[in-house]
Image (cartoon, rainbow over all chains, first blue to last red; front, side, top):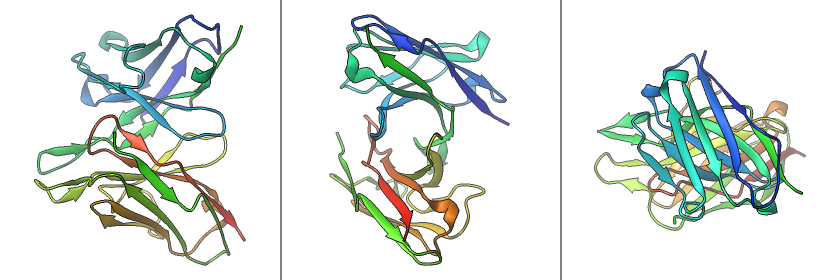
Length: 124
Length: 113
C-alpha cells in the first residue's frame, strides 16, 4: 500500500532553515500532487504548499517568502525547506498525497494519504 | 483566503446518538462547471495524522463507514455521524479545496457523553 515517511531534524535553531524529506513508497511520485501540512501543538492544520513531479509548485502566501518545496523523482521523494524559522514554526509536519478525485475535468485537492508526521521544535 | 469556520468547537454525544458538525466557508466553494463543492472532511485521533472521510462535500472515501455522511452546498456544510461509536472520538476538520491557499476549519472535538 502507499506509504509516506517524513524525515529530518527534530530540533532547529531560531533563524536557521528547517529541512524535511518525504519518501513515497507504493506509488510513483509522478502520479499525484504532493503537499506539506503542519499542525502546531494543540492547534489546527495549516497547508504549506504542494508540488507536482514536473516541479510546478504552489505555496501558502503566508509562508511563501520562506518556503521551498522540491522533488527528486529518481528517489521518489519530495522535500520542504523553511528558512528563518522562529518558535512559531514549531509544529508537527506532515506530508500528504493529493488524492486527485476528479469530476468533469476538475480535481479536488483532498488529501487521501498522510505520513505519520514529524515533530519539529524551534529552540536554541 | 477562504476562511473556514467550524461549529461547535466541541460536542459530547451519547453512544448511538447523532453527532452534527457544521462548517461555513467565507465564500462559495461550488464549482459551476461540474456542480460540485470542493469541501473535504477529516477525522484526527490523538497521536495520528488526519484521515480523509469525505470529499466533494458528500462522497465517502473508500472504507469509511456509512454512518458518516456529508451534506451542504455553497458556503454551508455539515458532517453527520448517524450513530456515534466509541471509536469515533476524535477531532474533525473541514477543508476547502476550491482555491489556494487550501484552508482548514479550526476543528470540532467529539466526545462521548
